[in-house]
Amino acid sequence: MSDQRVFSRYKASEIRADLQNVELKKAKMNTLRRKAALKKIIANLTLGNYAEMIQLFPDILKFWKVEDDMEVKRICHEYTRTIGSIKPRSTVESMPNIMEDLKSHDEDLQIMALETLVNIPFTKFTEEAFNFIIGLVNRRSTSSRLLKTAIYSLLQLDDWDHERVMSLSNILYEIVEQHLESPSVQIAALKTLYTLHDKNKKLEPFSLSVDIAYNLLDIIPELNEWDTSSLLECLVVTVVPTTH
Image (cartoon, rainbow, N blue to C red; front, top):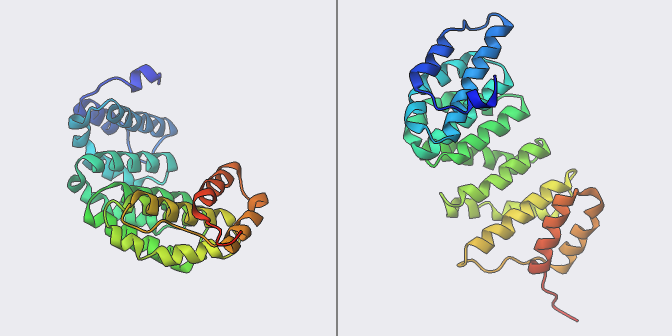
């Protein structure tokens, strides 16, 4: 299907007809048609056609429940995030689906689910996001990619519940101090602490001791360019020598 056809404005009834014309769990061609119809939904959200696309929420939930295809899952999460940012209460029915993905053993699904929870400004979603993140940062035995996503998610949750986010600051500081198997997690914790203090002017400026700074500089060979840049940006501001 051409991009021009995908990025055309559709009525909900037209896309629903496309979805109903293919039988679930059948031929490969039906799978391709189903994905094409779902892509039309995301394209129409991009075009701002919210009033029509929100009518397709029951259809999204139906496919979400029966599909194991990662691309379909990604579309379902993207749809829910977009609609949820506009009308958060209207997406509460998606909670069981999100939680099922969050508790899965697939890291990509867990990250998608966490990003969905964090991006919907409604208590039911943010509460589950907090619970999951608190468990991860306390355990620290999970994958580095998932843990980094959780740590950076605190920056979005700060707008929702600043006090609760700051209650985790000591744990983040401990992560910064320790030499973990994944140094990039240390940088995520450092960058998050630095940003939280920088955006909340009532907080004392975030600072690091010279010893911790030297320890962080030692891990530069293990970092990618993005993490190295974040580290140097933070150190320039946060390290204040106490002697000559």
